[in-house]
Image 1 (cartoon, rainbow, N blue to C red):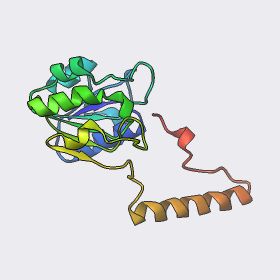
Image 2: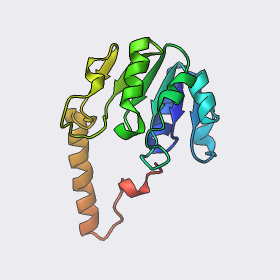
Image 3: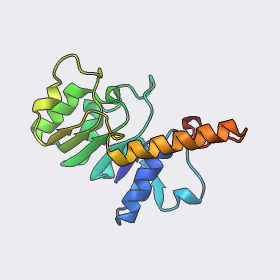
Length: 174
């Protein structure tokens, strides 16, 4: 499994993949060190594309990553690879992905994000083979919402007592 972006979420996905016995390789803007990265081989972007059966995107949307997955990137990927994107839709050139899916270069795509959310018009990816789209709603399961409510209540209680607030998004390394 190839991971693009080894921030907090990318690291969690990598650790989950390792727990399922997958070999994990990753690309990040900077080399990550520490025991939490043991067993994750860090490689170049091109190497991750060329060697991975599954590529999962977890990098932020920046000018450098906008359109990162274009026709050139898809041509460098393994034939029949699977692409997952839960980061930002604009990281993928959707026309190029549609072509890669239609030709079979990319076997399947699981996308939790698309360009221009909320969608104002249908995406070309909606009619592509082996494509699953979800509306960027990982928080939707009741367990996630309940956990969020409890976390916020605990933080409010901490704030009332002058204690430090925990689980802030700013603390995450993304």
